[in-house]
Image (cartoon, rainbow, N blue to C red; front, side):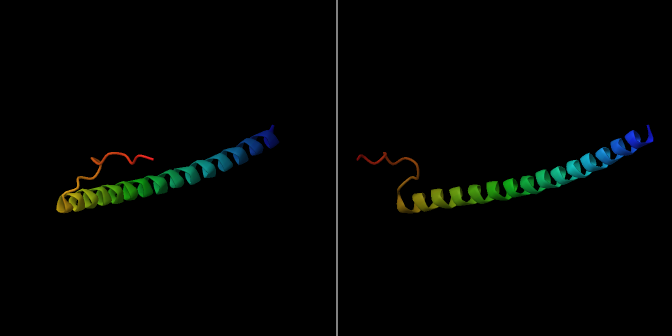
Amino acid sequence: MESRLVELELRYMEMKRTVEHLSEMVHSHERSILQLTAQLASATKRLRDLGEQTGTPIGDEPPPHY
């Protein structure tokens, strides 16, 4: 019975470490996604501004014909 309890405690500790590691990874990925989203919004705004300056609205041009 004692060996079973020790085994369960060891499994619990391993699972706890795994959950903590996964939580850190999720937090890191969330920060990366927020940063990339902000960069994409900034790049999109710059492209729109550039299109307005040149008189060519970005995204309104017809697709190329092959």
